[in-house]
Image 1 (tube, rainbow over the protein chains, first blue to last red):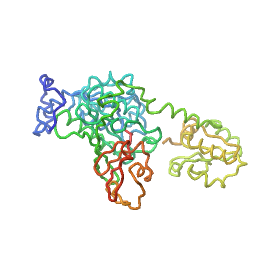
Image 2: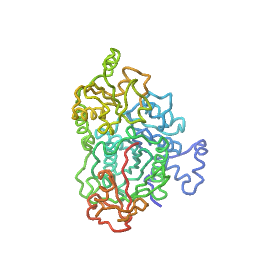
Image 3: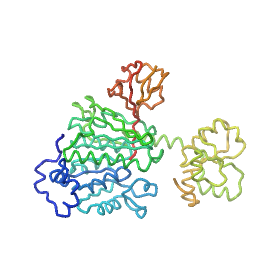
Image 4: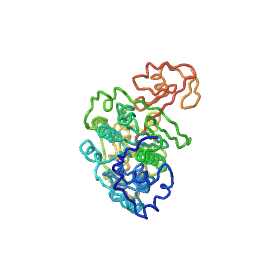
Length: 396
Length: 66
């Protein structure tokens, strides 16, 4: 049995209406919870960073459970591609600020919850100020810079950081709380993996239901810390494999040399997390890589309209070609291009195309090195084509 | 060498220590966590963690989506 992180003095002012008592009755009759635990929940405040796949079940379940105050941080707007998993937002919310849509959903579930909205991304500039008033920080973000930022600010402010992450069919969760004797994110990963090594859900996909499993585990851990019951998921990384339907537990050790939570920290204030994770450097390298002869989607349309003789070569994967294509395009996936170059004629003019222009730029360089001369890269790929030329081509 | 990796028996693995094993499995080292015979390893301990027959390893690739 652990201790509640909520000081008992804060429970004195907490009262419940008869409606609230009825609402929380299934909690109140459990000896592990009782009025005492429910009061702790109502007295407590939780900051949820991100209102996407993880943030949705976290916020909805914490609100339903009767958390007193819920802070939400997100600077994004709702997109159609979010709806497969982000259950805070509905079809009618596409184009709205995620925070407004989240607030409406939470009110619907439980109007007793105080909802604080922070319409911004969580960065070194605002993190300390936003996180300061809350008892628990929940990390439901989707990128490394924000995860390191969320970790560091939680360590500095001595607040538990309930971590969750998802990708494709795999999810992970743990509780970082050095002030309670556990490790922090930097004990586990002192240095971020280089950009591109760990793909995002936008790049690699994610099973829509998966954040439900992981987000709910994060909500459970927050509630346990607040009520002071059970054994927190501290010093243990829980890994969930949806395809095998298996949970594995992985030990995490506090690093005595940890640069933020160790006894001799070298990092004592928030840093530029984009820089730390190598994002600007990677963007510069990417700009360098796409520095090839380019054609805009509108110019490609004009070229097709004139009846110019050229080959339109799509270098995406076959399953992407099945989703959408530009009429007349030939498919040779980038990975097969080197072996299938003989199918192309170096005398032909070739326009290369992928989803956004990165892979086709690589393909262009490959063909250039092989002696092809008349090459163009479709700037912005098929996404730009859909955006500026033909909106009947779906974006994915 | 025969090892138990994530609960599954794997034979014919050629690796002297955990660092070599991560390479042999084709895993991206900076994005991987390893537990060797029940002990969570820090990256700096991979070279000193010499493998023996039938050792048990838990390997997790970190993910960051949300």
